[in-house]
Length: 105
Image 1: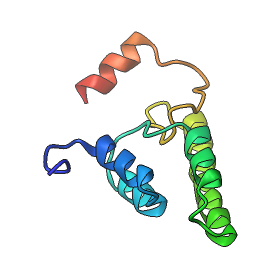
Image 2: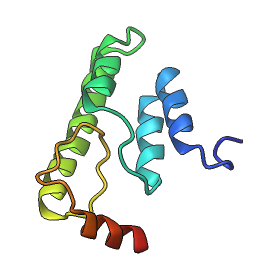
Image 3: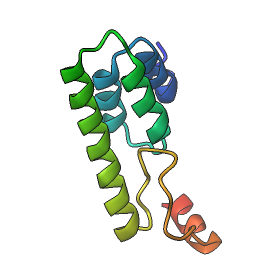
Image 4: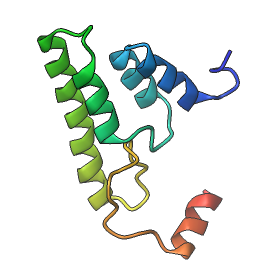
């Protein structure tokens, strides 16, 4: 129901809350929206989750780090790139003219 209402971030956070991290990441990557969650927050949640074994934790952390690396590279090369993590630092804030152009597209 929330998906049909386009409450994508709510669906994402529910999946994270119930410990379905991989499904949450897959879901978020399939939706063209940016700034899903803070990098440090999802990394901490995975590390503190006692229901995951060490192998699963390390695989999830590798995947999260991979998404962050892509964010870092894309942010520096494409000013219109919408980051996955909300705490990725933009090299320069878009000007109001650029923001208006993006809004029109």
